[in-house]
Structures are given as C-alpha cells and as structure tokens.
Amino acid sequence: MAQFYPLRVTDIKRDTRESVILTLAPPSGAEDAFKFIQGQYLTFRREFDGEELRRSYSICAGVNDNMLRVGIKKVDDGWFSSWANEELKIGDTLEAMAPMGNFHSALKPDEARNYLGFAGGSGITPMISLIKTIMEAEPGSSFTLVYGNRATTAIMFREELEDLKNTYMGRFNIVHILESEADIELFSGRLTREKCDALFERWIDVKGADLAFICGPEPMMLAVSDALKAHGMPEKSIKFELFASSRPAKAKKRTDAKGVGAGAKTSATIILDGAARACEIKGEQTVLEAALAADIGAPFACKAGVCSTCRAKLIEGEVDMDTNYALEDYEVERGYILTCQSHPRTDKIVVDYDQ
Ligand SMILES: Cc1cc2nc3c(=O)[nH]c(=O)nc-3n(C[C@H](O)[C@H](O)[C@H](O)COP(=O)(O)OP(=O)(O)OC[C@H]3O[C@@H](n4cnc5c(N)ncnc54)[C@H](O)[C@@H]3O)c2cc1C
Ligand code: FES
Image 1 (cartoon, rainbow, N blue to C red):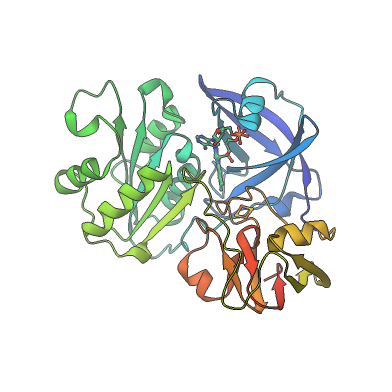
Image 2 (cartoon, rainbow, N blue to C red):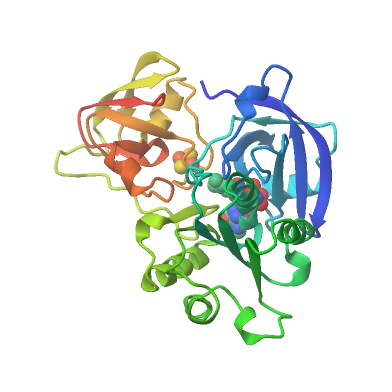
C-alpha cells in the first residue's frame, strides 16, 4: 500500500512573487522514513473539488541539513501549486509519501569530480539538494550551475545560491542566464542549443566535466543534452529530472503481434509489500489502472510517465510502455517498467513493486 504520512508545515517562506518554500516536519516515529538521498522528491496528495490530486516536489535541502523543504512555483491555473502559494498556512498538514527518485549519483568523498548542473525556473529545487550535498561530501569536487530564468525577480533561492557561492568559493560557480536584463549577450536569452554551444565554446569546459544534471522545461533539457553530447560528454554521464512533459502521451498501442487488443484480458500477479495478489487487466487498462481497480494500493503520482513513482519490476511476461520520461536505459534493461504507462503483451504478467 502506498503509504502517506501527515507532514506538518512548520514554515512558509515567500521566495519570489510566484514561489514559496515550505519546511515540513514528519510525524514523530516516522523521521527515518523521510531520510532522503540528494535530488529526491516528495509526492503529496490532496482533494480538490472532490477529486484526489497527487503532485511531486523535489526536496531542496542537503542530506545533512536535518531539514525537509520543498520549493513550489505557481503554475498558471495549476491546482496544487496555486493552492500551496495562496492558501496553505503554517500549522497545516500535507499528506506525503516517503522520498523517491533517482536524480543523483553515488557520492565519492575521495574523488575530485567536476559536475555541471543546468536548471530552468523551478528546476533549481533538486539542484539545491545536489549542490549542498556534493559540496559537503566531496571536498575535492567542483560544481558549475547554469541557471536560466525570465528575470532576476524570478530567480528562486537567489540569496541562498549567493551564500553557497561564498561558502564554496572557487568550487561552486553560477552562470545566470536571463531572458531579459543581462548586459552581456552570452548570458542573456534562453538556454537553447545555440546558447549552450556558445557557453561550451567560451565559458564551460564540457570535456573536463564528469557528470551533468539537467532539470527544467523539456525543450531546454533536450537542447542542453544535445549540446553536451556534441561537445563530447557521453550520454551515460547526463542525468535528467523532468517536471512535466510538453508533449501529449503517445496514442496507446492497442493491438500487437500477440493479439492483446481492446477485448483481451491478461491475468496479472501484483506483488506489493510482500503480498502477491491477482487481478485482471482488461482491454485498454494500464497495469496501474488494473491494480487500483482491484483495490491494490499501488503507488503513483503523475500518471504521465514523468515521475517514476509507479515504477515496478516485470518478473514475467511482456508489456508495451506508451511513454517513458523517467526510467534510465539501464533500469529498462533490468526489467523495470512504469506501470502507469504499461499495457500487457502477454496473457500473463507478474509485476513486483517491492524491488
Ligand atoms: C519528479 C517531479 C518533481 C517536481 N518538483 C517540482 C518542484 O520542486 N517545484 C515545482 O514547482 N514543481 C515541481 N514539479 C512539478 C509539480 O509536480 C506540478 O506538476 C506543478 O506544480 C503543477 O501542478 P498543479 O497542480 O499546480 O498544475 P495542474 O493543475 O496539474 O496544471 C495546470 C496547467 O499547467 C500545466 N502544467 C503542469 N505542470 C507544469 C509545469 N511544471 N510547468 C508548466 N506548466 C505546467 C498543465 O499542462 C496544465 O495546463 C515536479 C514534478 C515532478 C514529476
Ligand atoms: S505515476 Fe508518474 S511515471 Fe507513473
């Protein structure tokens, strides 16, 4: 059962006109469940107009800060982000799942590595966690952050980033790219492929970098990743965190070589919290939809192939995934699937959420 814990909102700080930073406290006895790895996120649930919504927000604190914080930027007409920015109060309770996500690399305190980070807008939140944790745990490493925003007033964590720059002078550098306001052409505009090429030719040494983290709008992430690869960074050294896909989910494939189509049924065994339960996947249903319809409390958040909350391992059978923005190639090779995007291709499948 995807377990939700009541987190108390202990502080709300207005960061920019459109964003707030929430500090949260787990209930007593559940502190260990909220120990996190740098770059992970929390998934909240709340009812709006009688409908439960789940939304994920990256933790923006270092692993040793002894603090649980998230930064929420208001999206125009967005349900959860508008409510969090306009109505949420100190003392309120937010229901959240334990931290999840793979937007990190293993810490190597004895190595001196060069990291690059590229953030757009609210994509800075997991970077704060990565920068703070890496700078503290790897004293020989350096981190260069390229942070794109509309204008200075939209820069989230502006003061905190300046403080980090002063604390880790010479090891942590920031390059702000602003759509308006910047005096130097190289630092003005958007993080497009051309902008990245110019930065990599004149300012940032991609060949000398070991790893890059990218988080922001999808077109920016693709442009940065293409430019990094063109300047010599291997694909496996680039890590992504996508907040929302700009493309609609692909049309579901409903027939295939094995003839699992609209009228077909598949027997599924779902393993969750050590218990194996049977259910039937009918016609157009995804594995997640079938599990939820059978009252199996499988974990999920975005239902759009973006967050990986619904990740499970396929033990038997085959599935087709409509989209996958969340799993890395090595995870897919090891048999992991996004159950919110998976349709069976075989008469029987076994899926394990516990692995
Ligand atoms: C792993 C993960 C981590 C995330 N971390 C953060 C974080 O740290 N801070 C943060 O502010 N957000 C973060 N997000 C995005 C967040 O989960 C929500 O998608 C976002 O706040 C919008 O939710 P909403 O309910 O307000 O909008 P909705 O009511 O879902 O959407 C309203 C409209 O806005 C569009 N929209 C939805 N999301 C976005 C977006 N991100 N940008 C632009 N348009 C959008 C929708 O297409 C829709 O038209 C994260 C998402 C994921 C998957
Ligand atoms: S619920 Fe987010 S990827 Fe499936």
